[in-house]
Image 1 (cartoon, rainbow, N blue to C red):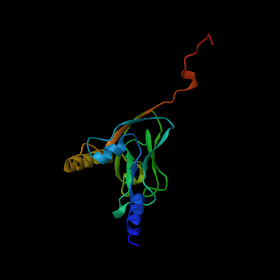
Image 2: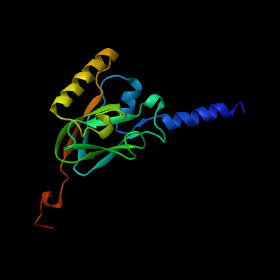
Image 3: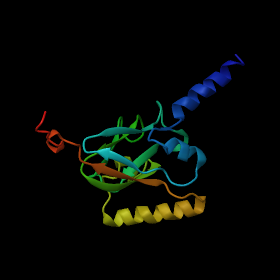
Length: 160
């Protein structure tokens, strides 16, 4: 029975732990230095950003994302804002900041869908205050979305 407690603790920890799946983001989170690396997507490309395990975190915190421009980069919650994995989807060509935060509160709860120009500025101001208080560089990264190469854009070789 005594050996069962560490196993149960490990099981619960794996349920609550969030894995940052975007390249370089787990290293950033582990070190808490600098800012998360920027990334690129193609229009129509979907990529897992957060593997949140099977349950939400302790104390009502569940890692989430909010896009400043969901018309360029959409945040998709697999099972709603508090459960399941979180994905990024390239919607249209352009760039958008994507912020890490608590998926239990706006604007993270809807992935940034509710953001307007005034609330984007408020989000940026709150972000700046948070990083100053906690001596970190940033909790956001920029996603650049590019068009997919099509067959029409491949140079034609008349000799083949």
